[in-house]
Length: 129
Ligand SMILES: Nc1nc2c(ncn2[C@@H]2O[C@H](COP(=O)(O)OP(=O)(O)O)[C@@H](O)[C@H]2O)c(=O)[nH]1
Ligand SMILES: [Mg+2]
Image (cartoon, rainbow, N blue to C red; front, side, top):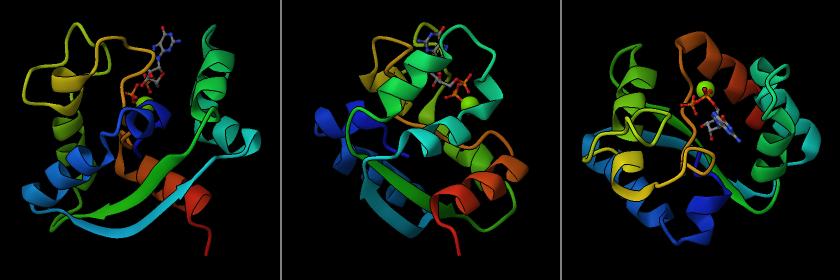
């Protein structure tokens, strides 16, 4: 998902281009402002963190671009996490999306599922059948 900061900064094309050039396939794509309920459900694993409210406010402040990305194996989430880079901007390597374009961890441009099961859960949330 391109988060609101990515849309605000005009980086959606750059991010989508990197996904395509990697050889991954965009199966679904939808731009929308998520409801608070959707943002809360999306980040439910962080519900007990001190930054949860800030995270939900951030994700709902403007449009995001939600995508379903498919690769040849069951490891697409892992390939995407490589493209995206580490969560903390101090660790995100140049060459990754966060490493090249993000300067603050709170606004690090992209969300990527962190496991196959997370991807299944998140796809059902964002693209209900
Ligand atoms: N405000 C705030 N946001 C944070 C902090 N740590 C992480 N985040 C944000 O919360 C998102 C979710 O955290 P996490 O699942 O650990 O990272 P990700 O899977 O790499 O996106 C991150 O992408 C950051 O945007 C923090 O300490 N404060
Ligand atoms: Mg995460």
